[in-house]
Length: 290
Image 1 (cartoon, rainbow, N blue to C red):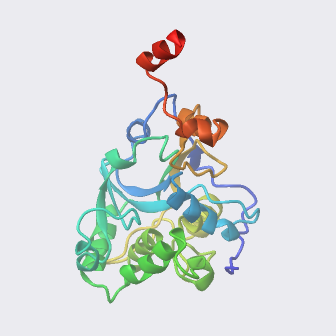
Image 2 (cartoon, rainbow, N blue to C red; image 1 turned 180 degrees about the vertical axis):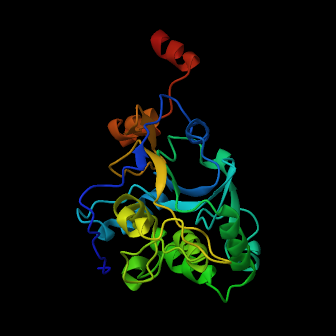
């Protein structure tokens, strides 16, 4: 178990507003509707890999249920965000060269059937300072070696060998570790309740929701090279509160994960019948003459 301190707050942060998505509204459209541009973005996916990441964070929650979130990044202009996704794409040589960082297009994460949960949170208005520190992290693995974190997480989500939950080993999710490091260099503590380096999207979410009193004392404070702190503000839309994985034979219908028609046929049809080829019209007529 990860050691986590509880906030003294008796009520959640009122500046973090539940803003349900409209019917058929994409994540890009939701961001545009709330006026999101620069800040932290949280996403919760339902692929098997994202489901495993959400489940891995369950022991950071009092109720031990999976997290809503599986990826975190720094939103830029509402159209793209900087992150360290485990959905590998492009040239693998870029991983060590860029310390695992990628600029992700929101268009690739806009489908609510694939990423049903989304949140936008601001801990500061000095976004350019955060971006400057992210560029340093991209160039200097000595600040934080993100590929070293990627390997155990990939091993875990792929269930390779004797892999265990990286969080239980104090190894944060790379995307969360990157965001927390950038904010930390800028003088903003993103996870005051965490007693370890096991950064994860759920810890950032819990901070925004319950640690608002912690930030009230430092609101507006800042110094040369540091970002000014504010009480976290933002919006969120949770379409899938209970984590579910959409496998290769599943589909999302009215926000529910159900088997595809082909999967149902495959299960309900006897194996012998599935293998037997259908008779042609010529064969049927020949049989009738006999």
